[in-house]
Amino acid sequence: MRWRKRADGHHPAEPTGPAGVAIPTTADEPSLPQAEVVLLTRQGCHLCELALPVVERLAGAHGARLAQLDVDADEALRARYTDHVPVLFVRGRLVDYWQVREDRLEAALAGQPVSPPAAL
Image (cartoon, rainbow, N blue to C red; front, side):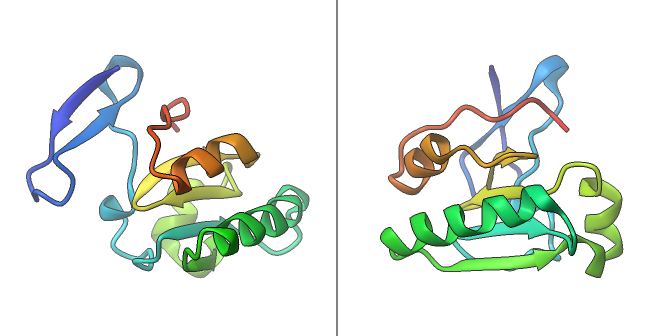
C-alpha cells in the first residue's frame, strides 16, 4: 500500500489502493455528514438491513455518533456508491462495503489501523 499526502491537511496521509487509486474518505464526499460513523444504505437492500444492527451496536458500545444516509437521496453519492451499499466510513475512512465485518469495524472504532478494502 502506498500513501499520498493530502492537500487539505485534514488527514496527514491517505491510503491508495491498487494502481495508486485513492481510497475515498468522507472528506472526499462533501455531501456526507461529519459523524464518526457513516453508513450509506438504501431502502430494500437486504445487506443494509443486516449491517445496520451491527453498526448501531458497535458504534453505541464505543459512544460513536452514527449517521445513516440513503445513497439514493444524493445524486453524487448514488453515482459513486450505488452498486456498493452498504458502505461504511469510520472517522472519514472507508472501512467496508457490501458487507460490514464486525472485526474491521471494531478495530476502526478502537482507533486501530484497518487496511482499506479494494478500491471501488
